[in-house]
Image (cartoon, rainbow, N blue to C red; front, top):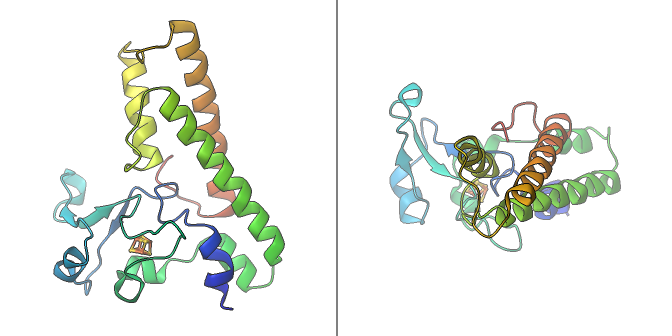
Length: 183
Ligand code: SF4
């Protein structure tokens, strides 16, 4: 069994909106074909990314068994990306069981962030964790508290969420990628 089969099919963090917000297309990627395959490729609206084509994460091509539905036609960013954990296992610096344990724990950390986001009223599961956290934080900063929670509970949950996001960010930076999309 190949390393991607042994490792990546237990992970999905680089496709499910935990590690990244978007996948940016590169020269040579066929945007029309990716669109025809169902990926919502659009042009970035951010001024600093003028004309950048990209599609959002969680990726709509990621299946529940963590396989990529468009694997043979995936864009070059996806083809070329190898996280630090993958490289460490490939270089035999980390044993496979230890890597799988790291993945399991990190997925649990991401799930805790998702649960807290839901409890704070953010139900938009088709958006990256970084964007969802920013959205919730913006509301708290504006004094808009989630419906159905008293103020003390809401602020307690938000403190818990902020800590969970920080712990996840540290984990992602140290084990997977030095520059996640500031989750
Ligand atoms: S196209 Fe495939 S490899 Fe790329 S982000 Fe989507 S699921 Fe992951």
